[in-house]
Length: 52
Image 1 (cartoon, rainbow, N blue to C red):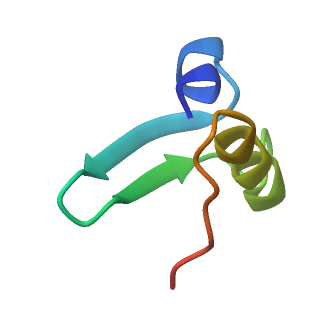
Image 2 (cartoon, rainbow, N blue to C red; image 1 turned 135 degrees about the horizontal axis):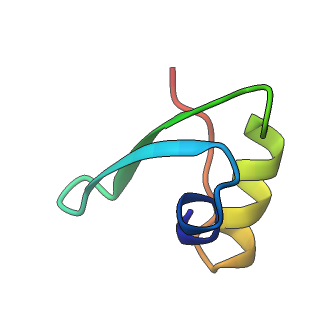
């Protein structure tokens, strides 16, 4: 997530709740996608499922 947030990859906001081990993000789907975000978090060592 940090790479996308800092690198201008389309993520505009990330809210992390450490107690629940959750992160919620806001992103521009024209610039990135859910699979790319999942890959980025997995590559950083934090595998992430999609929560609805």
